[in-house]
Image (cartoon, rainbow, N blue to C red; front, top):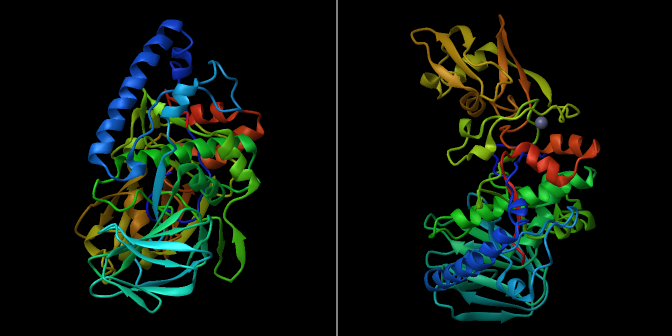
Length: 458
Ligand SMILES: [Zn+2]
């Protein structure tokens, strides 16, 4: 999901869909024949272009060549042929597990591993293991424990997986270390998409949520991740953050703030990922960004209200399914001084208090629009959106950008709805729908309008 960077704890979400799905199109023998001819040719073209221009394996987009539904969905197509299967490759994702960069971190690798330079492809070392060493940067490169390397990019390839720990998080796959221009270090976990998703599902949605909701979460998270892989800057060293800036990804297990070791994935999350393997949402046969948030609060928000790359699949839809969430409706407050100190753009430094005489809300709640306000301040009448206020007020004051404001003598009261940006898939709504007996497909199609479900067939 792409939540906004400061979206803290929320999880649940959902999306809708349409009629002319790929599954339906391919029920026609004629249409099926066209796909059989066109898609392998397209796949071959993509493969050739990728090999010539993109040395990174995971950048090879898997061809959209098969359209079977996940196991939970009644199949409408014959099984894939061996030839079709052979063409599909599971994508690889690169996840930045140190968002923002760090000065140092603790690294532990159980079992043998090989270190190589990504700059020169030269093998640097073969180690029997790395036991809780500290990784830091040097002016010319990187330092792992007591060993210095004159390269700014190192890949660690362990013999076994999972065996890499970064600051207590155990990850599958490989690890890449980058010394950034500012001297900070980025650690990037490189692993197969489906292994990544097994942790994302549990990191993003409680294990007690019903199976259909978690299957829908797996499909939505897979689509989100693949969209980010395909749209990453060609010069970027990673595709996704491990925080809610992209999707939360805790790894196989992790140590929390109180020192407890907790599971970051489970048999349940691995199962729902397996049951939906390769299935993504597409709109007119194209990937789109499946934004999602914890609780929409009764109606999702039009995607283009919040995100520049929102498609028409992200149009506002009603959702009464998230009523059980504690954030369906919420009330918080702030002292009037604290509010006046931060609310107007002109005094955003927080040093000067601008008196606000009144506030007029210029959008109606529950209409698919974000909240907008006009402030009657001392010498100005600034307009401000719910998103801007959420950024300006202390963290935790506003759970979403959808609220009403009551200005009282000494305090300001916020009556809000939902948790998170409210666009797309509503996680708590997915829970409510699953409990009412809806399938993962029905849940997804509620929140993402006009989409198809496509099986990449790897
Ligand atoms: Zn909802």
